Image (tube, rainbow, N blue to C red; front, side, top):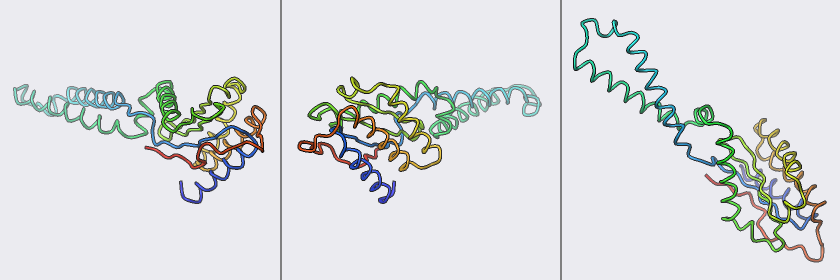
Length: 212
């Protein structure tokens, strides 16, 4: 995010928190997992395709029959193909292609749970912390509410918040998605735990957390 976009998100958090005793923490992460299995799958797939192709056109590159040197070249080509495939398995489009949505969702959930603890969102006075996390590689949004909020707001209502954010993400507007999500969250939070103007401290920073 640019400095201007970060300021817009922080202003949205401040505006939402004026009407509720809850604490909203927006976060953007590049990815939620390493997905090494995608590298292995890409490597195996390219190695298998290379081996199949070389054996299919055997007559073209082995006009005089098999020799020990030919087997060595075949093995070398297969290993090189695996290495190239494994390298390509680090690219985001390849990871998304070779990783199930359920697997990515699991990684996003675990990343959100770790961030919830790391950034002290679970340590608010009334257990009213809320994490709104965007994970870019997975193209997923995760909302993690503390215990007090989970008892007052249903998961279906949080899904509506997620849908609002995803709509803007698809248009490439991360800041706008966060702001819309914060506004929608603020509406729910105002109903569930309205602000006490005499005692509503800002327990957590309004800044956007950006992480790798």
